[in-house]
Image (cartoon, rainbow, N blue to C red; front, side):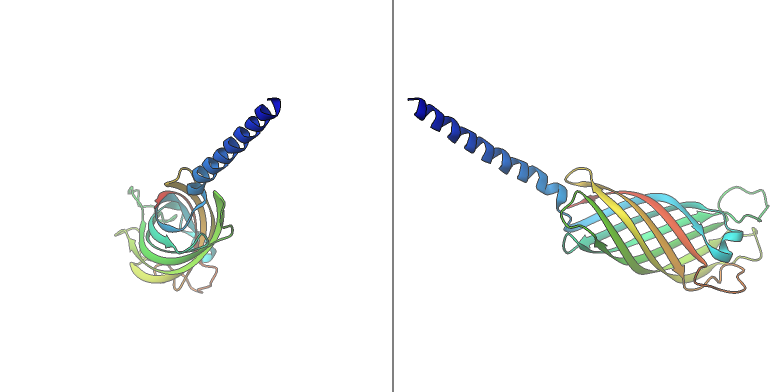
Length: 202
């Protein structure tokens, strides 16, 4: 009789443990699956380096991105990127940004882990943007269109099965700086960005 009771208890424990393990694996799966379409909305700050940094103050940066990850590692994205900056020496006393930037870019991202809720990644791509200078702020700055190469790294975290948060830092190497009074263009004359992004995955 005692042997039968012990056997029954062992069987119950095994069945219960197996059910809990299966339940845990089902509930945890949505948190580590990065493959599929996604979108991101971000807000942060940007500034310029090299000779551009002398007269352009850091300002607000914002973006909107849609993308698709073909696996937990590799992803492709396209998006809008914008920013506003003040010219340090404008001195006209008029409120509002002196330079408004609007651009579009495409990038590849590569995750550095494949099955973790917290995933670091790197990215690289290409973009084009338009600089619009407010009338009358400075005769030295001009409306212009140019290209750039964004490279960077980030950290994404799965908050819920459908919601993610990301911190992303990028450096944008500018093809040209014709919107600004640069006498000697250099690859170090670029733009840096730090973004906090929230989005969804499907």
